[in-house]
Image (tube, rainbow over all chains, first blue to last red; front, side):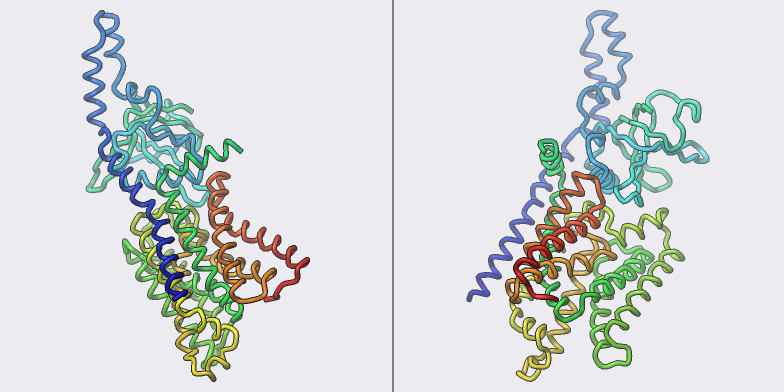
Length: 185
Length: 284
């Protein structure tokens, strides 16, 4: 009898611990309900049309890109405030479940890397984990036209990148990137 | 201190941190329960051997490009656990020699397979992650967490249900056999449970560090306590506490998870050695 009671207690305890999973599901659902890239762009365009009575204000609003509207203020995902262990795990999650992050503004810090493709170059911000044996990177596309290598830092140099998380298809594969990105080195 | 607490609160919002703590606690609990038995049966190194087998199995699963590697890894590890047990009894290659042979064999063949057939662009990362755990514990999916919860419940249930039989087989196998206990069957059960724990623990500390998770809490508890039940309870509490503390330190201090847990285990072992010197405990 004592053994049975002990067993029941342990099973209840274990399932109580595991109950945190439901909160996550809720969080994921909320994430999915948040803005997509197109929503942000549409909202920014709408704001640009509504505001500005004077010609000067209109010109100012028009010059402000949708991305810069999204990137002003707080970021949805600010990886720069996280430790290296957590950053790696969060970037891993962004790669594994990109649908939860599409449309979110992201700020990250890491090493600059470039892959020179046949049709275009791919620029990325690379983050290493605490053991320094694994690395995750996110590709970014700068908002303003930039020429490689003149407008980019040296390979491996530490950079801070901000942009909006998005996915795209290429040759049948899905990839993640930060669009309308801004980079500081 | 406030900064550290703030960091923990911030990180708690991330589901993968909560998953890591849940899975870490469960794995630590399971490994400590069987750890006492393994240490007393002089099977401390079997965890290390089986973890290397699991590494070889992961290499095969990776080459086969399996989405869920756990079933294959589990089956191969359990088979090897049974094989090691049989080899240790009635064959020409016995005990430690059998473990060493299977251990290094699986490790070498696993790495060879990964090198020759792997299509991964980050082979060294994959190997490092499997051997040292890396951030595996922080990249678990909800499904993996549930599998771990179910298997942990099974392991704890088996230990509680067969506690007295495991106790008798652990302390005096010949006496257990003489009194009608099917010692071979219980040894087989222990081997299967160990294999399950090893596969689960690979996510937490990696295959090279699993033995630490199995033996340190048991050895620490044996420095202070004298009977099987007290040692088992103490070992479970120590193991869970060290795993929790290790995960939190690694998250806040930005250190590798597996090696941080092992470092905490070593520190606690040193502390319990000192306590044992004053109180006088059982020597393993």
